[in-house]
Image 1 (cartoon, rainbow, N blue to C red):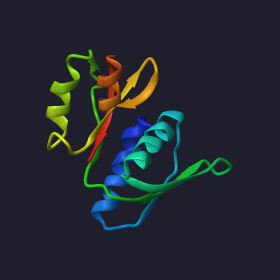
Image 2: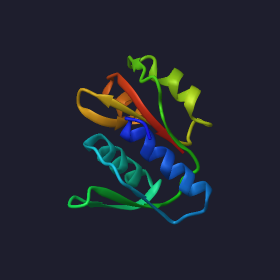
Image 3: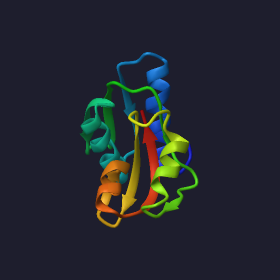
Image 4: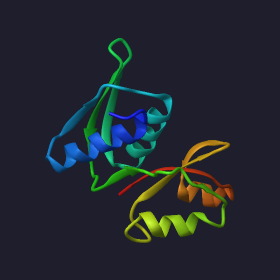
Length: 126
């Protein structure tokens, strides 16, 4: 395991999906990971997640998901560059989501383009 909680969690989710598991338990958690899970749940990539604060783990039920990865290195993008990176990481125009950390919090690439702000690329999923 590395020191990147988000990359480890997304790898565990992807491996569980490839192994045809319904759910996965992630033994490390962070506020950034919880915000990413909120976006993934809103988009339907995961069905639900349950946070156990006593034992510090997150139980995730996988939904309609094919691929999810953390973006390394975490490129800084302007509002004009979002489209370039969306083309690089996502398979099609209407499929998938790139998660961007902005000064207004984490948001999808669609929301960032609507707001007209850039930020730091965190992860993508489809």
